[in-house]
Length: 222
Image (cartoon, rainbow, N blue to C red):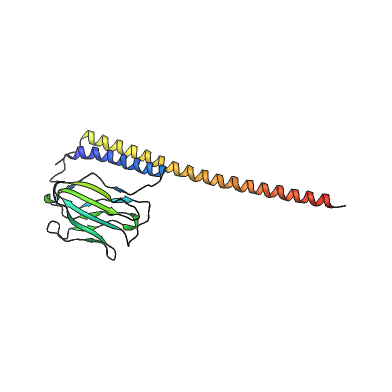
């Protein structure tokens, strides 16, 4: 079981990585599917925890072709147990299992490509690896996200290093978000200015044509 402080430091790095990915997508455009998940999630024994999974795709979700599964395995070497799947007519449906019973519910939003689930009354036996598989044709490749759930019996006191890591992650993340927003605004302003220049050139051209027409009519008069 990893310590909370180490996982918090990794969470700060993951936040920066996710924002960098969004920046790259905004610069280069979407080329394929990406599944975005936290690498590690901590949950206190007996509480509820949201296991997050979202995806990006070049194509809008088609309910008749979309497919996804949630699976659980104790370790990477164990067989995967499916506990949530997507049906075309029913949407996201939990599959009753001996491990989870009816403790898993879908709490995402398909309209926003959010496939997150919530696990209620977390038990020590729930610790392990959660896999989020996504297929969104005509994307050719299946997306796969892997989350490690750590179940804690108590929260250790926050360390100075973890607090600094979270603060740095939040600061860098905020700066990247502002950079992305600035790039979008600049792009829109350039496009608007280009349209204005085209309109001005068109008006000037029409004015020249009208002036030439008047001059031509003047030369034709006796």
